[in-house]
Length: 179
Image (cartoon, rainbow, N blue to C red; front, side, top):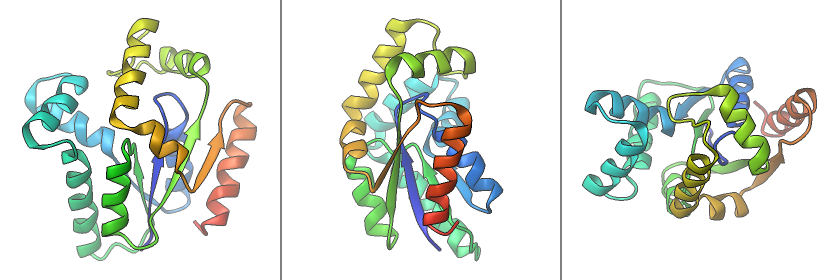
């Protein structure tokens, strides 16, 4: 079973890659969902939980929890490709590469203005309509090391065109990896 990762700053378009991959039979394991599930249990915001988990259990606890979840799926006999959504640091990439043979990273890039507009329209719990908060969130992601992950990716897709063009790029990539 192949395991690959998707990285990109908030609003770049990672979720659409996941949606299309699911239609093609992949299983998505979202590191963000793991944080949101934990936040719900703790009665905290996602941002608080991301920071608190790392303070309590170390900087790479979310990737450790993600790897455990994937290994459980493997132990259950799952044969589908697994896509890990939301990798943020080079060390996390190293951890996934140590645990899963032929692990690759796809990064999605879009400029900040476009991403901010997308997040304002999406308005998930951890999104903000305030540009200052958006920039702070980006900085937090960059502090985790997401810029290094993007720069060292096996493949980068630029998502600044129309939706149809972006979907075409996603499908071309998924064809390349035989999903």
